[in-house]
Image (cartoon, rainbow, N blue to C red; front, side):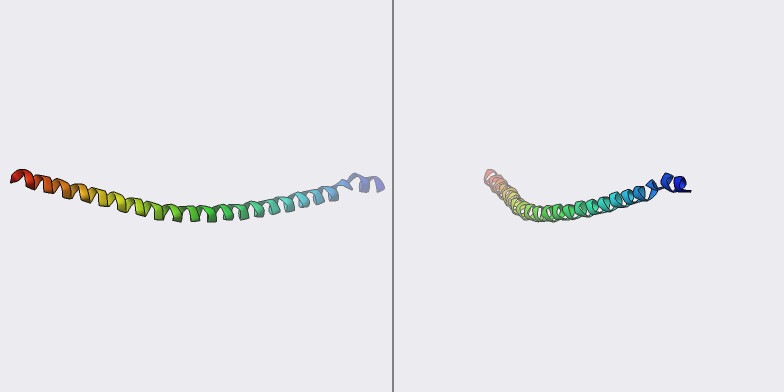
Length: 81
């Protein structure tokens, strides 16, 4: 009987090892998740900054195209006169 007990005495330590590695894996996963949240918030801030910059550049492009159209219309009117 004592031999049978010694034979399976390793099982509880194996179970403890599995539980410890499982807990460590869960803790690591939560840290990775929080790091991903930090990266996502930084990316959101960068996207909003780029959006405002893109809107100002887009406005400048539209103004330039409108000015070129007006100039071409004025030149076409001068040629006809």
